[in-house]
Amino acid sequence: MKIAERGPVIEQVLRTISRYNMLPRGARAGVAVSGGADSVALLHLLHRLSQTRGWSLVVLHFDHRLRGTESDGDRGFVEALAASLELPCFTQAADVQAVAQGGNLEQTARQLRYRFFAEARQRESLGTVATGHTASDQAETVLMRLLRGTAPDSLAGIRAVNDGWIIRPLLELTRDQVRKWLLAEGLSWREDSSNAENCYDRNRLRNEVLPLLRNQWNPKVEAALARLASLAARDESYWESQVELVWREAAAYHRLGIVLDVERLRREHSALQARVLMRACSEAAGAQPRISNLQVDRLLSLVSQPVGHGRLSLPHITAWRSFTQILFCEALAAAWVPEPVALTVPGAATLEPGGSLLRLVRAGNHAPAYNKVSSWLDGGLTQGPFWLRGWRAGDRCRPAGRMDGCSVQSLLQERKIPAWDRSSWPVLESRGQLVWARGLGVAADWCAGPGSANPIEIVEEPATARV
Image (tube, rainbow, N blue to C red; front, side, top):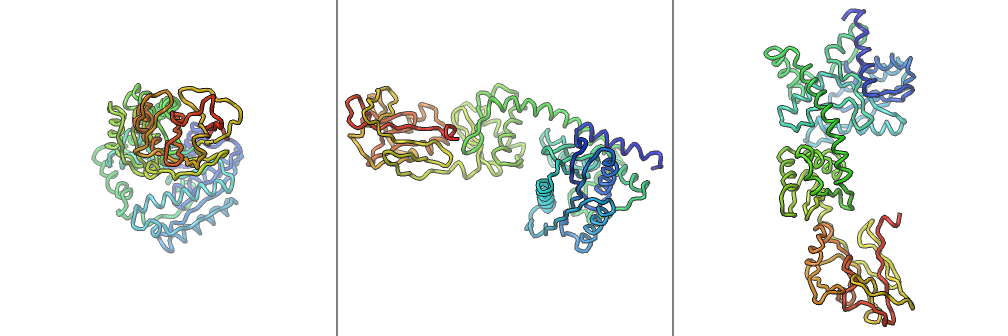
C-alpha cells in the first residue's frame, strides 16, 4: 500500500464508527489488544483518531496461557505498546485449558476473555470495548455456520455492535487491508504461531477451505460472505423490531420464567413465531442457548398443536405447554414444590419466595357478606392450627354455591389454571380439612355467615402490591 493510500483505511474506520454510532465525542473506551496485527492496527487507528475526537482509551489484554513463553511475550509487547502511546493498560491471565477441562477450548477462551472485558468496563467506567474483528473474520464465521447448519438469523455473523457495548470498528476492512496499512506505517505486531495449526476449526477454514474457494470458485469469496452477513444483519434488524411488537403483547414474566400467550403467537407467520420463541429461550436461560433447527421446529409444533399440554427439554431450559400458554423456565424450576407454612390468627405467610401474601384477620363485630367466592371463614367451626400449602392430588373441595364436592384438580382445570401454577396453587388446611383455595374461596362447609360469632377474613395480597 502506497503512502497516499493510507487515507482510505482510516476513512473506512470512521464510516463504520459513524454508521453504527460506536464512539461519540468524548467517549471512554477499552481496546482489546492481543498483540496480533488486527488488534494492534485497531489501537493505532483509534489512538490517532482520538486526538481530535476526545476519546479516552484504555488497553485491555487477556493472556490465555496457551503458548507458554510466547504468551508472555505477547503481554510484554502489548504493555510496551500501551506505554509508548501513553495509555493505561490492564491485563488478566487464566489457564484456559484447565478451565475447559477437555471441553471446547475456543468457546471457553472467548467466555473468559469477554468476562474480563465486562469486568474492566464496569471497573474503569468504559462506555464500550472495541475488538479487532475484520471482514475476514466475518467471512470465516458465516462460512463455518453455513457448513455446520444454521438458522437464518445466524447468517448475520459478527455484529458491528453487540450487547450495546462491544464494538468492531474494523469489521468492514479485510485482514489483508489491515496488514498492508500496518506495513505502510512501519508498525510491528506479534504473530500467533497457533494460527498455523489446523487442529482448530477456524484455522482449518482460514488456511485450507477459503484459499480453495478463492482459487477455484470466487476470488472475492470473503467479500461475498461478508456482504451476505451485512444483508442478513439488515434483515434481522427488521425482524427484531417485529419480535419486540409481538413480545409486548404475548410475553409475561412469571416467577418461574417466561410465559407466552399461544393464541397471540398463532396470529403471526411461523418465521416470526420462531424468533419470538428463541427470545423466550434466551430470556429464560439468561443467555443465548444453543437451540438446534430441529428443536425450533418442535417448539413451533408445541405452538400449533390443538391439545394444550406437552413439554420439551431444551439446553438448560424446559418449554412447558398448558392450555393456551407456554412456560419457558430453568429445567429444575418447573419441578419445584413448596413446603407447607404454618399460619396463625391473626397472621400472614407466603407460600413461595416472592409470592403473594396470605393474611388471616379477625373480623370482630363486622358481619361478612355472603357471595359465591367467600373470603370469610367461620372461626367458630375451626380455630386452627392452619397450614398454607400447595394443592395435592386427592384434595377435594365444595366451593360456596355448589351442591357437590369435587377434586381440586378438576376445579383448577375448569378454570384453565396452567399446570406449572397448579403444583404450588395455594390452599389452606385445618385439622386435615381443606378450608380455602385461591380462586375458589372458603369451602362451603366452613363459610362464615351473618350469624357467625367469630368470622376470620382471608386476604391475599399480590406480590406486586407489596413493593
